[in-house]
Image (cartoon, rainbow, N blue to C red; front, top):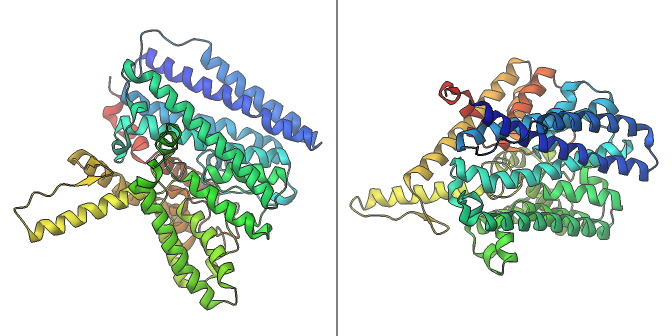
Length: 484
């Protein structure tokens, strides 16, 4: 790879690191407000180290007349996320006095909005660290939206070309429009975060907890300020606010842009949105009725418990209202399946994404009709886009490697001595971005602290692979990629 290209990549990563260093001012301000300044020097050191590293990459400057090609963006995407996680781990290392393995795991989980954690005692933890965890979710969420809207469609990853917008077009003609799209996406993201914070506050949370949970919910991350997660707050309004904000975070942000531009029916008419909301409502009603039938809860209370936990798993957020793994074998299996679905493309949610399941259904229906009418010409469309061979091949490739990745990680974890439940659900939850797995160790009532260090590094890789849509990382492993 040419030196000017590496300089551009380094320059962009340097900007990211400087931004990360500046972001550390937020938890520092939180420490001052709460008069918990004992952790302030640790954050100052972390911020200074990060800033100096970013400055060292920016000072050489950006080469003129050199532009990134699509293949260069693969390297930029992967290295930027890894390098940011390396430096985002410093506050955990310096304030919590945990190993760098645990610090990196926590930062990777935060920036990828996965929500798996190695920390406990959150109720009495430093407010600076709690704010930093939520802020990592928030920054990672907006970063992923930008990547899903602008980069992945351009790289033709996993069928994302279905959602190609003007922000994916590199022609000079539309660049002003792409900048406007980016500004409107940020405005929507910030606006929902503010409204979510106010809604949580109104529902009964303290302002600090409300801001943290709003950032976690909109980014579909799942870090909480309590070990009990949302079960710590007994007010039903808090739980319903969380459901709404999680759903808002799992919808396509490009459709928020379309709404802000005047297309009031953009969200309602989208097949992804219809499919996700339909799935959630049906699952709420079926599982809620079953849960009500098997417990002494009032039907509305059963529905509330089910709605929050199901929405959290489907949107890959990771909040929990009680330990749903104790609800019985039927719910255990159902939650395991739901964790693979994910939200919409162009949202903060992880998982396979709802559109891929919808496209698979369209293809299955078309193939069955083709068997009945061999000579018929069957048009295959999704959301107004023709499903050409390239899109179908891309979706099939992603889905195959998604499954293979989970299987390989689960096998590697089992070789380290983990039981099959922890290995399988740990692999699935980190690659899908759900956060907690199932079982006593890493279930909704546990965390990942007791796992061996090697397992934490493997699961950190799983988080990165799942967040970057698998193929983005795998392409770097091909020798041809590195040939000039």
